[in-house]
Amino acid sequence: MTEQLLAASAYIRTLQTEISAAEEKAQRMRQTIESCWSMAANALPPPAMMNVVGSPDETHFRATMCDLFGELVQRGSIDRTDTILDLGCGCGRLAIPFAAHLDGGAYFGVDVWPEGLDWCRENINSDTGTIRFIQREAVNNYYFEPRDPGAANRYHLSELEREQVDFAFAVSLFTHLQKQDCISYFSELSRVLKRGGCAYLTCFIIDEFFFDFVRRTGLHRSVSQEEQGCYYAYQGQDFFAGYTRETWTRMLEDSGLKIVGFDPGKWAEKPGALHYQDTFMVVPQGYRKD
Image (cartoon, one colour):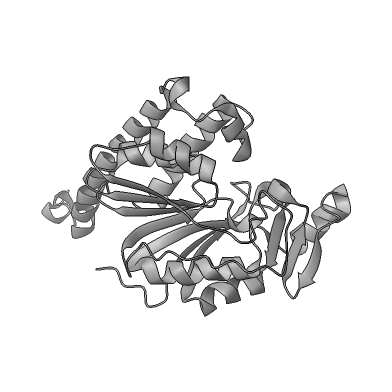
């Protein structure tokens, strides 16, 4: 074997450095997940609160918490010193692991549910990072009350500075928000994300797979188009908001965000799906990694 073959290439040397950093991140992530699995039951939200965020029992809550946390850390390549934004934080399903994971970083959880936020403030804290929960007032809080299409919310993130956030996520939030509320949050996301930051957003995309699913199963027949590209149905916590890919993309782009990744969802038996909801990775327009 020649001397040139024996010597590690620049590519291999780069990989070795990246692997070492990745192993350190993975170890920290595993430790956080293990600590969440082993938490005492009384350190978790009460079952009634778990139900509100879609978990029928403690086992489902723990599994969802750990699975989502692991994916978010990997998707966002999150460092312990990063600033994290959780839109629709509920009763802390993802605040719990991030509070344990961050070391010198910050976590902001935003929601309209005062009881969930009160539980978070009383039970979730960190000795090594900043943890803050923010209640957003909703004139039209149609997750808990009958929807009034004529009442406009004014969602904002004024507590956060421009380009303050490294990674943001909204899991099963935009599936419950009508168009103008989505746009309010998208515009604020564009403002608070760092130019090298990104966001993980889930939604329901109305496409040919959805219409085929309705035809085959008879489910979701009440979902109807209220305005161009916007499909709504049901009431309260069952409120459904879905958007065509064209409408969803336009809302994001008009707000200053750009789609860089997409995964289809299992909810309408879409081919190749890994997760229940359709998932997008977005970055600010003018993305710049330092």
